[in-house]
Length: 354
Image (cartoon, rainbow, N blue to C red; front, top):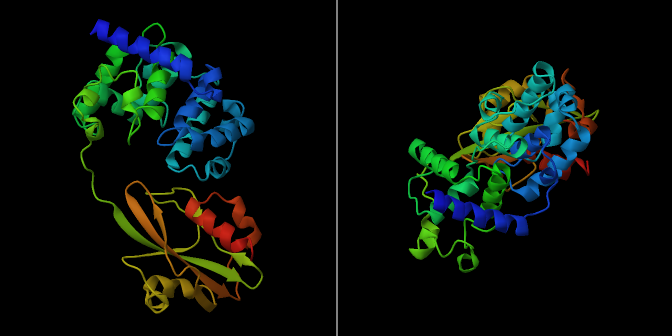
């Protein structure tokens, strides 16, 4: 294995040094900036995450600045990046490091794991890039690259698979330059050993890649099928009062979009029309609190918003009323609240011309 590891790491690092993208977090070993970039790039492509990273370091140049921000402000700045638990954990960890650790990040893998929202991947990345610790990273790109090059068919979403790939990555890592090795591993997987139609004929590993030699590239990595996607039906009641106020509420229960804001919601087991909607007990209870003058459907064709394990089939109902409830806000202020992209797109389309 030492010879194979040396061959693999040397070839990979050479490719990386000649082909790496110039990204802002690659010009620093500041753990705050590395941690921030790694949290943002979880389940997010670089092109999508880069603008958010730049916005965050301008608004919060030091971890103390992020710690002192209000959570709603952080969520608003994060809006559109998805997986909002990352933003909440980001803020919680910033507070912990700033207030309990004097603004100094842990310098080792074990203590980094104690930070909220930091798992094996992020702890390994920060430890190796910032503190030169030989701790290998394993993410989706790494699973794909290693499974193909070494011909591993163990499912990556099993405990056995995760252990096997972590051990292999740990054996391959260049202990003298672990941060460079890890970044090279992630970069090659993201840009070259891509999920669909990789250019294997031009790959630096095609002379030794088991999947290429055995024509198994499209079948690796192996992943056990997870539970089927759940279909949910959302009906948002968009209140418009005569004095141009509306109602938005914060989601506080468990599940998607925790602590983001939305219009009053009625979730149903299937699509409903106006007549059916009015007969629902939830609508009846809602209408008792305000004087509904009229209600109309904004979008005949439902908006389908796809999340990782559920699809939201959504309609927006425009409810006009003469009354303003105590918790109503001016329509002009809706854009200041952190909302899911689904709501943000509607607000842009509807209220911009209201």
